[in-house]
Length: 154
Image (cartoon, rainbow, N blue to C red; front, top):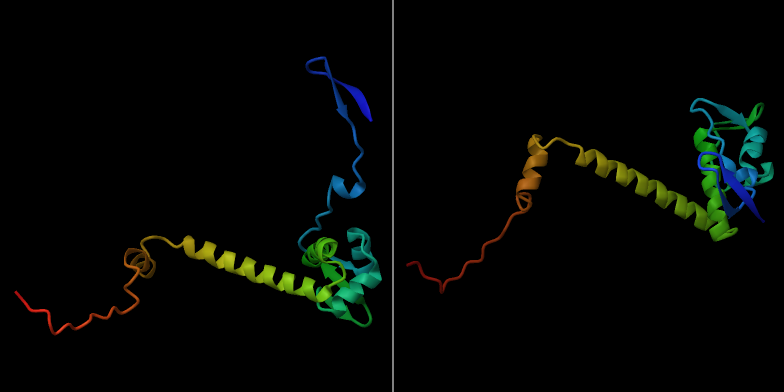
């Protein structure tokens, strides 16, 4: 539906379609770093059924922070982020939970490698170990010289 909108600053009108965004597209709730939520609250925040969260835990796609029998499962900020990642992958992979687990493991390994590369690239150039590796890339390997008996000294 196209409506005429008036820009109060310029008093000009434009015809642009106005579409309503669903409540999920407006803003994702970002929990505080120290917050812990019950499985019911997590289910509500992420809009994933409680039973589905339990299936993810059973298949080790998700780990609860607290899993005592008396208190039930509880999830922190990382658990909520993991649930969102799993749901996004389910739109691509469907119900292939083993495939999703492999993708999550590879993603975690990739993030760790990127972190290591960043930390290594931040090392100062005055570091002797780092400086030696940059200045002479063959210093760590031994080069073999071939002996040629036909070659004579001049």
